[in-house]
Length: 158
Image (cartoon, rainbow, N blue to C red; front, side, top):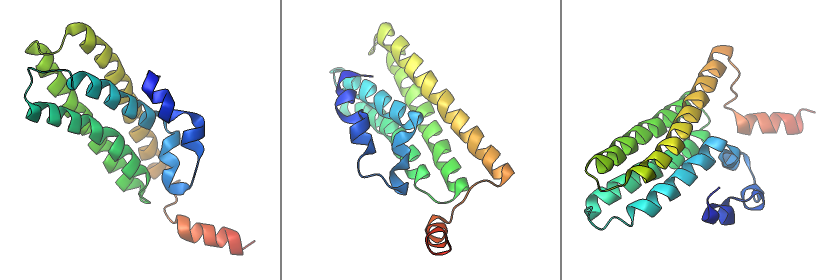
């Protein structure tokens, strides 16, 4: 894990003030998305030859990935969750295209890109697998989207 990531992504930090809405913090895919954001942000901000507008677009697209994973997780509908992971995957594709253009124009060096590509590929595959798993849950009808009602029933029905 990146040095500055340890400061904020340690278990104590991620496990405090837990509730059903913050459960995304346990997802490896979400953690990797945060790490990739930091990796890209740290590089993009050093590129003096790249216009601010382009740097902002690159940062926005990679920031959107972890945001959509978290927002989807916090939805109570599995279909909504799947849609938000699809949006995260779209943002990953957008970011990859942007970074590839910057490598092609020689604004970003190949060595940095190779490291980015490994991290990106890992995150992309985990996101795809997350969606496949959720789609299988729809098929098996294993998703419960009534957490408030379910908690009340469990609390008062026993």
